[in-house]
Image (cartoon, rainbow, N blue to C red):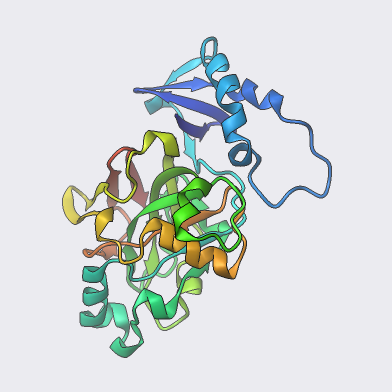
Length: 285
């Protein structure tokens, strides 16, 4: 299934160029009282909601995809986990370009040494939102990434069982302002975490370790790669992350960006595509 959150927080099933409103399927969920759980309820109940969603799609209102506003497909992620320098060629360009390494190439270490980092959930936006450049006097870069959405609680999970904990996949943009601050600060600016345009359930992706991806800015291709080039695979990333902190349903892992990162400025349009998921166009303001 391809599921989205659209307009006034409606749940939609993507059917070609149409969105079917299946929000009524959420009636299957029991009401909540304070304190609320530390997870996204749609994601945590995704498997049991499959049949109600299919039933709701038979009579749900339809809208052209072009007429709806797409929000992040995960409404309440507990955390956004991100993988730095997880493609070898990106590691090379980060070490070679002074604008990226900020006169400190030695600090650009391999992912096995530096580990992962967290991005603030307040930085999350969807496909219909715009990236708002916070510091126009500094360089802001695009970074295309496959995003993994956790579906089951994962605590110290081994790589061999890791994919059993994945609910879905989406396109991620890990926007970055260059500077000397810690990664988590420079990448947690409002609107600097893009997730969309929808989520694709894991059963629809035959091999997440072999997906083509491409990003262009104003029609010029800048990033083109395949997830088989990841330094740490998706199962290995889940193992690393869950060895330090428990992953909950709705948590998102940004798996790393390939070579070709580059600056964007207000007025640019970013087009991102990942095989098996789809494409989205993000404006920069």
